[in-house]
Image (cartoon, rainbow, N blue to C red; front, side, top):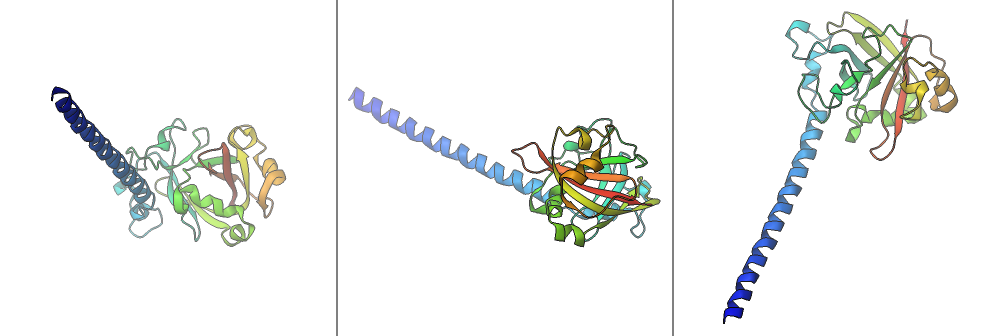
Length: 233
């Protein structure tokens, strides 16, 4: 009897452990689903567009976007319509939104080595590669020549007040490794020459200061998608 009671008790504890394991697994699955929903919903939040320079009744003093905003980038007829942030390093805005809050989606941001007024001959803007073409996930489409030709214009509002406005012309797209000095060392020079020789799509020679947009090609490689624009003087 003693042995029988022992095994009955052991079976009950075994059943409870199995149930506990299943409950924990269910909680993990629910958390992962919520996390994916949260990241995606924040990446498609278009309420920030009311703080875009040039819109009706826009007042930079009333905008909750932090003063780290150096520009607003719009590529016509695409999902790319975001403030451009800049910090003292290239880490902060990987996980900080334009309001200064922690966010897995991060922000679109200008390389910390670049002039915030885009007066450099070459400026580099980064953004996360989000699903469904959100954030800079939309850059994938520009590797197709037809798409790039049909979506080759944009606007860059400079500063939080956006009083200075530049028109952008997209002229090339390419794949590059993250360690490519010509593209990702903004002081090295040679980005245009790299694009000319390695472009997936090349439409024309740039006629002004160059602005490159970069994102990860996917999470498993060091390959980057880079779209090249120039400021129309």
